[in-house]
Length: 248
Image (cartoon, rainbow, N blue to C red; front, side, top):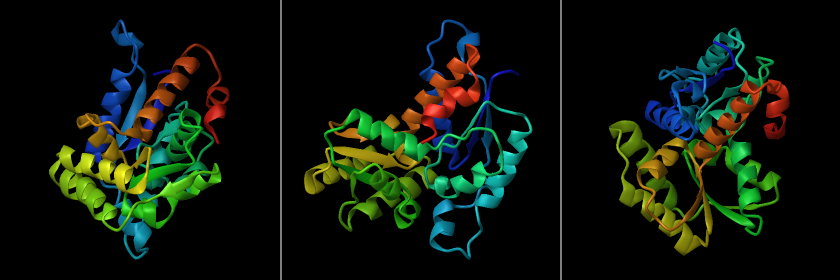
């Protein structure tokens, strides 16, 4: 297979399924051959990212991701992507394993925010406890000169319930809960734009999009970037040249 990329997924599986579905449905096609070539690594055994970030005595998820990246690197994909925000905690270590370009989901999403909403100085952030605890998105947002609003103490329990109790444990999206989170961030904390800092939240957006709030969905953004890059590469552009503009 020529001109393909590798998806390091399985964190969690339903969120990865959502990403792949989005990837396939956003490609403009007239025939089977118009779809993109990719290899999906759905490594469902990757240890919980939040558990390790908050407590280093827990299993280190980098070990599993390291094995996945090294295996895929032997196949020489055009680039890597990883549709899990929290797993970007070890992005820098993963990049060191290979010369294959590796998209950074979080940085791409943050730059999309400042491009689409240049007048907004603040963005609301909802994410896993791990991402919040280690300031993964917060650091990226502050790097581009914007402020982060996390909301009050009532926000994180609702977000955790939606991600873990609903989606990860039961495989369902509580649309009312998702909308309540967005409404609270907007009405109570003045967030005109809310960033969905977890792919389970991207799944919630896919399944329950009927709301009036502005969201930045990194999963959609990553899918669109992957499509753009792979079509350019398929047309003859060098992979490293194509991806350069997204290596912030």
